Amino acid sequence: MKTYSEALAYLYSFANYEVSAMTPRTDLRLARMRKLLRLSGNPHVNFRSVLIAGTKGKGSTAAMLASIAQAGGLHAGLYTTPHLNTHRERMRIDGQLISRTEFIERMRRVRDIVCRYGEDDLGPPTTYELGTLLAFQYFSDHDVDLAVVEVGLGGRLDATNVLEPDVSIITSISYDHIEVLGHTLAAIAREKAGIIRPAKPLVTTRQRISARRVIEEVAREKRAPVIMAGPAPARGSSCIEAGKPLPRIGQDLWIGVPVWLPLLGDAQLENVGVAVATARELGFTDDAIRRGLESVRWPGRLEVARGRPLVLLDGAHNVDSMRKLASSIKKHFAYERLRVVCGFSTDKDIPGMAAILNELADEVVLMRSKHPRAADPSKIREHFPGARTAGDLKEALEGQRVDGELALVTGSLYLVGDARLQLGLVAPEDQDPL
Image (tube, rainbow, N blue to C red):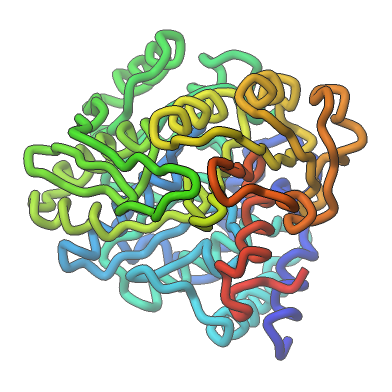
């Protein structure tokens, strides 16, 4: 392979539960990952790590922790999924995406490992497993001091669970991927709790009682100390008015010292609480924590993409996150009219999210992202009475008023990624071939 497009095509040629229908998850997944790592010289044992599971808040918490680690003088790796515009977003060191050139070279190495992997009863590796392998090799070869790693799905059987983290984190648990993880919060929590390590600390946030009981039970069995992190107290936040000049965007928080967080939303208060508790467990100073939080960037989550007319992007894609999004919009934004531009993946609770958006919006426009799992707008219109459809963001935003109207793009991170591209927020070199 000589080009970035060829490297991506090779990676995506393998079975991938992120793109195809969710397949049954078995212990073979971890066995495959361990075999790939053995063939690679076990790069994952060469760096310290923090492993983050949960339904919501994983990515934001991971971004905060990596930023704190960098502010604290560490060479910090960050591995997150999915991405908005380029697969290279999934692996970063000190805030910088892996380059296209290095991605190509490392994918050649991955291909060599796959050739040695051979065919056996473990089955072929998946795109996600090979991407995780590439990231761990990348972190090892660049001598990162600490890798902050987000679990892709679940926890117990996720490819990232081969790590032996210094600290495990479980963020807020709600219903998502129920066909794979289970139909009750307790079942979902048990999958997430699979990342807890014997005698190693677990940091978690407030959970619903059925999920909390499972987490506490697993922690007791493994004699893992549990640090329960409360939300960071907010002292003030931006109020953004449609049609007015944008203020300094963020929230004024107190974490023992004052800090300005350049991210909006009540959900981020929980994420800050978890990130700060973990950072203190790892020994970072308050100064490093403050500087890390004030420099964190995490696009696509209550992201103000344009000021006049006002456009907001948020990747909420389940009922719980949509409720929190609706609450945050009412808290942080002032507008006379709200236009919701939304699209969803087929495996999500579309009727549940529709109920929230229909109550919130003055107008709904349905779109379809370019992702293979994106739902056809014509097949979900029954959930959105009076909604219209649009082929692209320009059509969806046509006629938006400069004064008084807020446009919200939501329902899918893939749709948000498409919107960021169409709004000019993504450099051409940072957009993968479609």
